[in-house]
Image (cartoon, rainbow, N blue to C red; front, side):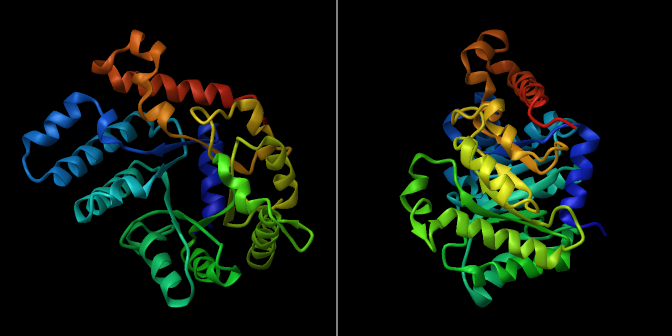
Length: 309
């Protein structure tokens, strides 16, 4: 079996795009027909929402599966619905895997020792979809508690050909509150970046990239360029494209000279494309899947100039 990053880059090359679609279902933004069908099947409020989230995400996956290499379900939107939501995200992940998509579970886990191992066991199925309860290829993690919190995830990545994306320089406006604080003569995010690079050098010494990636926001283009140079072996996951303000020009710095090394994420602009004025006028809610398709194609086209082979 191939490592996570080799499998991911193979799919990126096959499809010719580094576009990553986040799956962020929100009840108030779903098409009426999806909500009505879910409600018609009965159950409690959370059961209806969970059913709608699953149906919506699976239909969205059907639209984009042949266009992009990967999807990133945001676990929080499912988790808030309790057990029904967790079954829903479990089914969505497996559906995406069955459609040959790579899946990054955006769960932002992070803890020490046996607890971190339990998180890794839950979310990091890796190459074998049956390798974990939630069949994701990779998971996002928070390293705030220290490098030892990463080791169980690194071990799982090695053993299962899975991936890990460590929060390094996030896209939110308040990222600098902690991440810019000086430690050892450099910003904290740079210290975390150095740890990510070191883990890749240790565990994947003979590969251009390891399977320990970094989350670096498109909203910080200069830091993105700096961190690409600082972590030459780390695959980057770049949020903030689209609705958060990041553009194709902003993400150029995420890529190596050969156009490799990054996934660029868009969630709301694709999930709810028909809510955008132009798409609403062109497609309307009844053709929401056509709007999703057009938005995905628009993103792929925009990124053509960013990641140049």
